Length: 522
Image 1 (cartoon, rainbow, N blue to C red):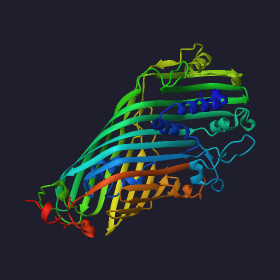
Image 2 (image 1 turned 60 degrees about the vertical axis):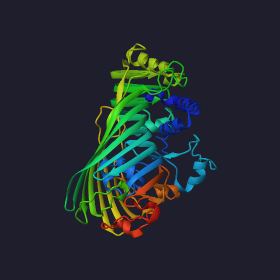
Image 3 (image 1 turned 180 degrees about the horizontal axis):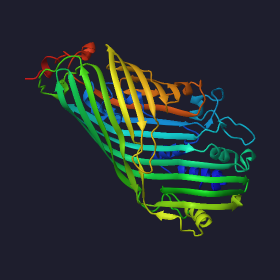
Image 4 (image 1 turned 180 degrees about the vertical axis):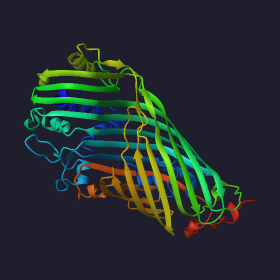
């Protein structure tokens, strides 16, 4: 396994990453910081932003067909930011931290044990995993014109996922190879996957109501996304059979693994940036969605002269299904893919391994395992898939301004190597008006970990979290989830100069009214 001989160099790699962060722009720092959050996890699906009848252009993130059910005929999003992290290895007890001072830098991390670690770790032998996700959505907009809806968005996104990590690997990384309780144990590990992807995204969305009869409404939607890969890396290990003999010797009996990297570095000296292109790869992605809505009343033919005059028609319930982030980025610039098949090695004096740049590191590994410094290099391009998932949404209008939403997200891989979107099952009651909205998401993360969240929309500002217990210091800090957005809505049935209709906006028989005089249509 490639990481095992390198555990001794963890501090050197961390120091390098911090130097790299200092040399980047502010946006790049946000993206790269998510890579460092994977072990010490710093919102996943942001229900307070993407759910609700005022989500508009933001609802395309969960199902592009849902645009047609929005209470707004047009919106303009200025900024939306989500940050999510979760892991089942490292944590800080809830009693030992205060979230707000910690984030603002006014409080230092606690120190534990003789090694001076800033965290504790779980000592069970289960597989470890972790995710770090950051999404920064910039200028986005949506417009509805009857049976059609159009939207566009811009975004910078970052996903890092670690799956099926053997329990002993992060322990060695924390304690170093001299951790005697794990010496002379034969470990046989399989199907380890670590992937990281940072990319820019420009998307166009379209939705169409293809069938309307009485109170039945069917709609389909699609989002096409042009992807610009900033960085990509993966480690895929089919199997590794090994034993750590002491603090300087590892006996690797058999290993089959591959790794790819495309980074903005000069691999000969680790200078940033490298002389190549800013974006190391390109690709295309898709979101596909379908919705069925049971309306409260049948349709009436009307041809409003302005799109703002479109009436909003209420519903009993809505069911949607979607496939999200179907696609991949092909990295060709400054890309390396290394392969180690059926290799073995009794590696003595592994503690003396040192390196100052990527090429030196990979050359040493190739020399040690394959007998030649260049034999491991198998390709100068590779693909990493997007965090593809299947999603089902159900939205029930209980009465007046009260709704209940249920959302299921199940990840699946459509590429050989891909970042993974966490599985989630969530039920979210909400209270919704034109200028105020409150949600209480109750979710089951990876079908194992229950969480309680909260989100509030006041006018054009939304803030929320899926882990309110962590922010309040009630639960252990083994992850974080927070999101916020700024968006301007233009409500259906309300045109410039109209009187505010208040509660009438929630009625199917609402007819837009105009002020007399200046705004009267002649």
